[in-house]
Length: 374
Image 1 (cartoon, helix red, strand yellow):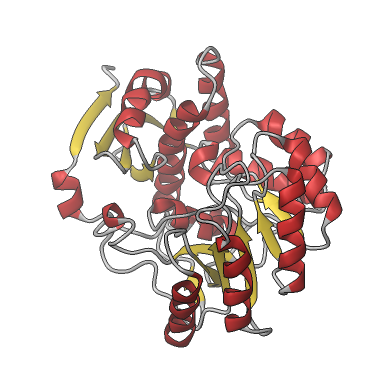
Image 2: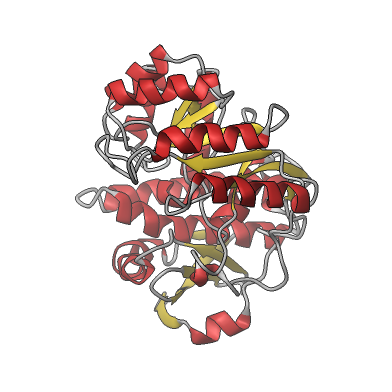
């Protein structure tokens, strides 16, 4: 049994990587959630690291990772919320990587799965794009990378029924859907943009155009509104990417607010808590298609998760935005762990998460250290 000796963060405004070192010299890498990552790093060192130092880093039972995360939640019970979970994700994912490297296995194998290909859907983050341009770039990606599933945006983010510009939703749904044709899986995201009445109207348009997945149609914190849409439509209504609270997840699943759950590994507080959501959903007969909207470690972790759970959804979310939209995600890793072939990504088969963070990125980041004085 080894124990956590040192916890380091390497941070800029957008990304915070975490390195855990055990008293036996074992090392693991994880990541907190992206955006305002420099703030999350402060929470990590103030409210996570003090409770983790000296605790188990590696033993015969991986359940110690969840036990430690839950104990930190109890220690910091006066500070529930997104930032606490965003910070906890750095610890949890680093400990899973450490375990995989120490045992010489990829995380997916630690969970009972196996490396291999995963069908991906090309996920657009853009609303400042015309329907015609969105359709054109999807077709280029289909022809170049073999994608057979695509997701685009309707409405406006938290838009209160006000579109990104007048008439865009009515235009983008048929324009993109018809360009992709019947042989392609079609998904859309409302990003909490609609009232139930408007969401149902939009859902009817989606049904007519063969779109099968309607994500977060109503304000995500208003589960009863989302359930109204789910009950009214024949297509899958999905959601949960923002949610971190397990009690909220239990209520969402029990009331059947959605047809498909979409937890985010980093928003949730790491792999261990996300597995709990997947297990709750599996018990209720619901599939799990996690949210992973950028090409940082969140997508790698999600690959391993999908390769192991009993109720994986049909696809891996795969962001298609590059330097023009997510310049900060460039140069995070050595090599290209996100290569797409025939519309599929590949779960890494090297130990741990199976990726190496670029030394050049680390050398440019701000480093902070918390260490066990013992």
